[in-house]
Figure 1 (cartoon, one colour):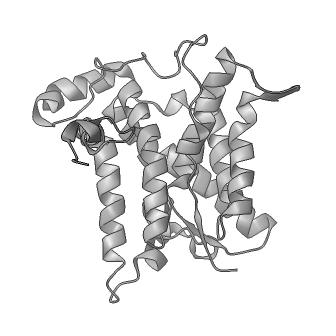
Figure 2 (figure 1 turned 135 degrees about the horizontal axis):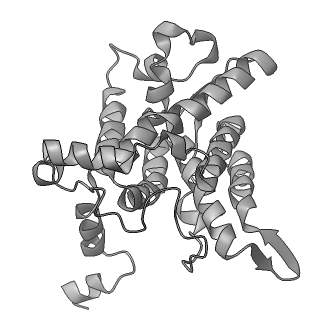
Length: 270
């Protein structure tokens, strides 16, 4: 039987649709994916141990190694680890940047959305559990964004109905983290829980104090002409759902499919 291009386009996940989706990815999302892939490629050489350099290792945290709070989400251990996390992170990060703008995404992910989960994990691991388990992986962002989405979904649809059982929708990231911990080896359950906690704070609006004022963002964008100079840049006036922290609480959007966004954080060590 002859194969036709129209048959390919009819597939649920056609290459044409995938290419179209990738071409529409906003700037910060593209940059994060590029950094993740580039760092993974650098791991193939044996001169410099990228994972050891950038992993979040509690006992090695000091003023000179605070950079680890920003490097651990973009470093991965192995091809499948990086692949799963890219597949999980891309739609969530793309949606966040499209809704809130590129500069806001940069400010939050370089700042509190990386450092807060990592800092909490380090404190608990080192001073409460007295352990030194290193972690890497973008699933810290996956579960953080999933938790934020769960809060927004909870406002519109408080429960998931499974027969006679009603499950609060805000608990879905916690259930997902437990399932991942059971099914996927070498994952950091504690790391995922720290990310979910920060994601809940994000969804509830408690982190909006860290969001740059819209007036400042608009001034920077105009002064540097970012929209004209940077392809795929999302300006403050292009956002789809308004200012972060003032999102509608009665959204009718369907819940985000859990199976599309579950990744893993790689644990290094016992």
